Amino acid sequence: MKALLLGVVALAVVACSSKSQDKPASEKPVEKPVTCPTGQVAKDGACVVVVTPEKVAAVAQQQTRIEEVAKLLDKADTLSAPIELINGLRDLDAWKALAASNNTAKLADEVVAQLDNGVKTLRTFKASLGEVQTRVGNLKGELDKLMTQTGATQKLEDVRAQISAQVKAVAEPFAAQVQDTIQNAIVPLSAKLEELGAVVDIACGTVRLKGGDKAKALCKDAKDVMGKATTFVVEFKDQPAKLYTELSSTLVTQLDQLIDAQTKAALDTAQA
Image (cartoon, rainbow, N blue to C red; front, top):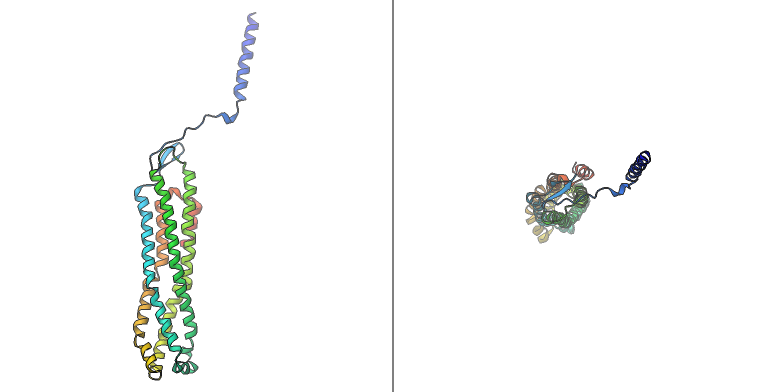
């Protein structure tokens, strides 16, 4: 009888052990959501700081920098004045006679076309700055949410994916716009304004006496017109690249934990 009882107990223990081993893996203990202070997210069951008021302010400051460069582009109209000047001179019969025999004067058509394209490119760039400023504002809005949301905390990997996507939306198109502006506006304007100045000097020195009152009126302010255009190009030429560098560096520095490695690499490549 005693042996029988021991056998029954042994079978019961084996059955319980078997049931325990057969327990589905899905029935693991449920991980309790972590609750962190604002500006923090959950990582490996703990809270980590990813956003502070200072970091949000640094991102917001980039909106101001974008606006400053946009205001500087208001002076881009000074580049239209040399084009209008040379076009006015080209309408004169005295200019046409000069251009027939002067190789420098013949360059006017090519120079004016490149300058005109440069001015159009700058106007396009100014419009794009408004779009960049809006995207930076959207990014700041997401950071503001992290500074105000309470309750169950988001996981770091989820927040990082969201912020990285917004950083790409800010930086990638802006890098392309900066490159286009440098290649199609700043480089040709820097080179061709000097050539245009030489053409204007020759033209005004030759046709002013033969072109009548119109030629005199056009040439009267030629030096001032060329001077203002040259000053603008000198002041503006470094601004697009500098602005992109400041923006991308600020985002990487201030949002270090919220930008994934792929996005950081893309920013570095664009900046280079």
